[in-house]
Length: 475
Image (tube, rainbow, N blue to C red; front, top):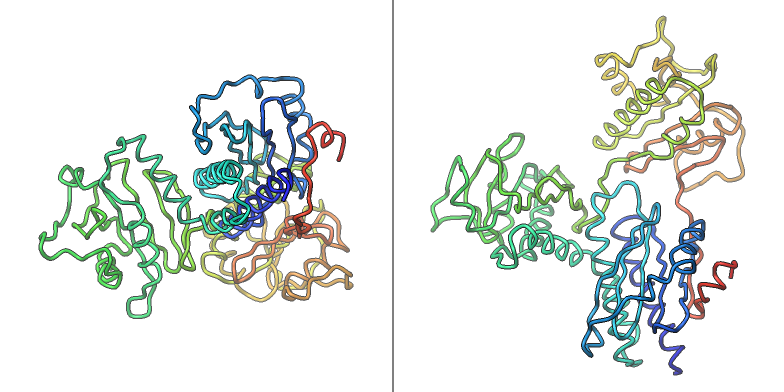
């Protein structure tokens, strides 16, 4: 195998492993890489799914109009696999990580910044590991094990969360921590999979640096010879009942359950909040990730509905009213997601609302009133859609969305979703929000799901990264 072919294959396997891993951790994700193997070699762009398109002006400014990326000196002292972090590029909607080494003079990795992620920290650690593994692959030049790094990156989710927590806690405490992070993460996942009398775990469990526990105000301290071992998930799950539906939190030193507290905890502490079949992991006040289905994930599990917010900006009405309408819709959607029932909301932004078949009322409900909003949430559970006008009035419920068939209907989705496609295709100034019982949220306007995931074209090994100059010209 030629040297150039070997390097291209290394990039392909590492990028595909990274893409697959991030897609499982977050949402369908694309990967791009700008790199140069030597100071004088041309920059190349690995971007098979056009992640960096529309960023050409900024990339040209950073890499063509300026040579700052090329002027940095390396201080690696002959260690081919050592990586020196470089300043990450700030491109809208992207997460980036860059590094330099003797094996690869410059590399900058990119992926998508999805709007509903808890933290970019674990994803940046993932990109950092991709950069390090690519350095090793290029430096070792061992084509027998080519592709191994891709498999490592594909399953790196747990390790990315661990690496981020270690980095952040080192900044708070220094490197001499006795709280081991891998056992903490294994315990959180183990407890989340353990039922007690058929019920999933609820309540908070906080992991505290052992030396700091003596400074805490504990409601209860368990005797040292009879503390539940963190490896015994069933036992810990039983003790978590003491923290359910309260301000109390179980306290662990990473090895066993020490006691219960209602007091503030040290900022270096890791907290697992269990909410039934899912939960969130915090470091101090930062939500690092969520966990469900036996693994960690980037998503915050609440629809951000950025596309709805952008769609509302296209209509002319008061800013305050637009904001209150958006917040009200978010409230109903989040209630539906948490309680796992499907619903549809028709946002009728016409000056004169449409006449829609359904249950009307003698007087519309003013949803700016908290009691009326709670009633609207309950009515959303019923078959049919809520009909809401631009003045935050509920005009009807149990409404039917009719219309002629459109050719792009999705047979894998339910009647509520496809009815919304038909209805919005035939009616102007209408936005329909569809919440499925299994949590996905769709924003439909003009017969189109405006936030549908694109099916990116698959990438094949034969992809040859063009030079930056050729890429800027559209190659």
